[in-house]
Length: 314
Image 1 (cartoon, rainbow, N blue to C red):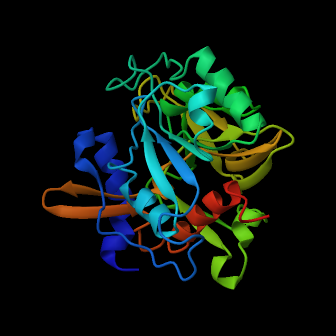
Image 2: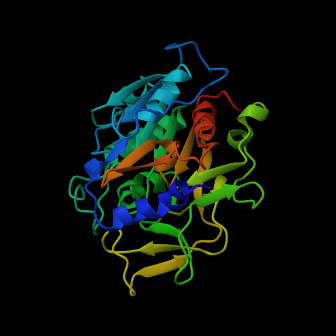
């Protein structure tokens, strides 16, 4: 791999630790993935509702720009949600995407305590909607986002950890990308990873630092952490200290599916893999997410997730 690729991830981590303003973490609007056989003709697909009513870090025309473009190229119709959730409003869409919602008290201050981004009424509405046939993609990245989504995830049996899932490295060792693949049995066999043909089959995906969570027993894991990983739970995001609480997470997951009543849901503990973003620092541009040169199968994986929720993959 070239020097630029070799140091990309370490540079991004360094930028985060140094407190780069969030405005510098921008959508990469140049990214485009070629789809040989779109699921629908343009604009004829199912309605996908992207939540923006809960101070979401990822929005339709912002950091979710590449995600939205990918789905539009597959024929889906996308709209932004700007209102609190009710069953009546949710009934208008087939797929709901909630990514990195956060309570206003935690916005701009990524520190404990973490408050739920959703009211009890909203959680009940979402649960009922999924049970009756709704399709939910819930994404909560590293701390503080798992804390904001904890109550919503827990109502379906998922126990999110409000921390940072990271590989344990030795002193002086360079931190690398998180790879999950079939060979290591960290990427599981599933309709999402199998697709409908060789061109859709996923053998490896790349993750860009998120959380680990425990799924309910009736869920099906997609991404599983092996031995050698831990979760760090700081009081403030990225502020790791010698006394920071940590736990081993081998066997925990970063992605899983659940059939719930007549509905379906997919839960992920990492958001960047669904995006294409760039960070500009001192005149240098760093790209990560679907546009990362090593994340070649991430775009197809994202498509497969949505197609499974839509009932296109069984």
